[in-house]
Length: 75
Image 1 (tube, rainbow, N blue to C red):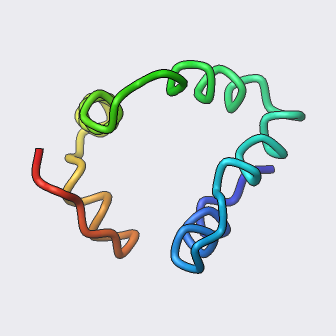
Image 2: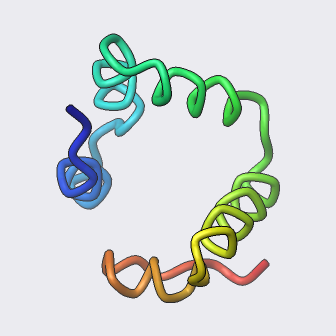
């Protein structure tokens, strides 16, 4: 099962979070689909995707980032 907190720890410690995502994707078809959707996208496109997902769930990207302790770059 994918643990978002493990992902955040990997990012903060300078590890490659893609390895963790690929491991999770082996047993999770939704994770594999998410990875495929992200491949080849620019940082701006990825940020827009994240904003759209947050909005679809009734929140915004800034609120999600704040909960995770992430500082987002300006778009």
